[in-house]
Length: 400
Image (tube, rainbow, N blue to C red; front, side, top):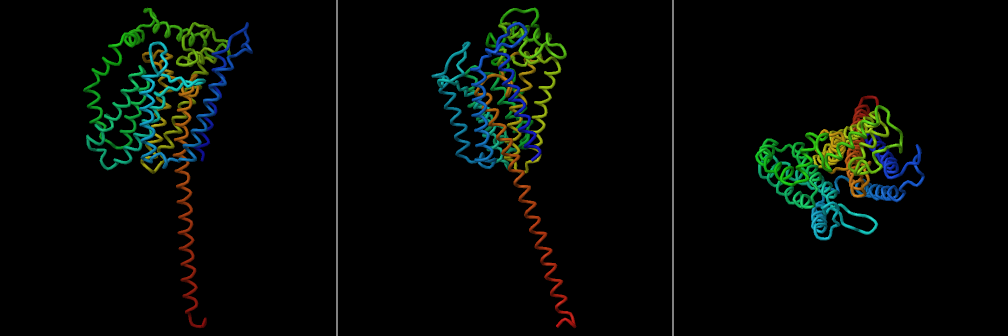
């Protein structure tokens, strides 16, 4: 129970802070005060997405439960539906900055790549729990999962979303490790194809090559990627220790691109300083700790792999975003969970929290059942002992 309370407390804290930051980054300043004419539309859209995500988390945790997520039809629906959505976005998707990643649904846009992260968690946990006795074999433990990943990851890569492919790959690696498969076979294959992957993913495409070069020396290069990093550094440095105050960021005034999405952490550091940035990182670290604790306590392998997958998505994406904003890794489009503006991202993140809650709930119910079973067994033993003692006394001379 304590873990579930901690989980939802941290999520509520992060979601509330996320709405606060979206109001700040999409508003305007008048003098030193945040204008009342904050972009209410973006805040309301994000709040609506959070409400839908919470409804999805309730369905996953309460209606389906952790055991419901192992049903083959549900797994097939998750994987097949995501694949169909990715195919649809390639044909019907809306193009933004040269990438087709969104399906226009009127008031909202759906990003199928976000659904792919959820599908990998559900699909990988189901597969490795089902093949638990065979995961040490190369075919079942490495090749089959990699073939499935290549099919789904290839569709995501076709939408020009390398960041989501990286997240999916990290999730698959974590699940393979926790499932007990021979990780050396997997890593050996990765090392063999790593040069080709690096060439295709980071060097063969012009804008990705520019990102790598900008990462290596952002202050002496021109171009949009170097400009992103320079403005992010300026924003973080301007915040100092305690920040310039909520709504007082100057980076958001068309200086820092994507200030309410991929680079929102830089604005957090500017407005709340190093203290706020470290506090936000600590909150995500605590969330990862709670997720891993839930996974550690799960006795069912499928439940454990679900919790590991959900935790890795949330943790890797959070710290990946913060590392990009601080220039520690090359620039890559990756939202900050619960904080960045984006309906698809926050909905999927909340559903992943629902998976963690489902696993914690299942373990809690199992412990309650064990306690009740133990109580009944103890009662039966005591009852038998009393009956035996009574029979012995009844048989004694003088009691006839």
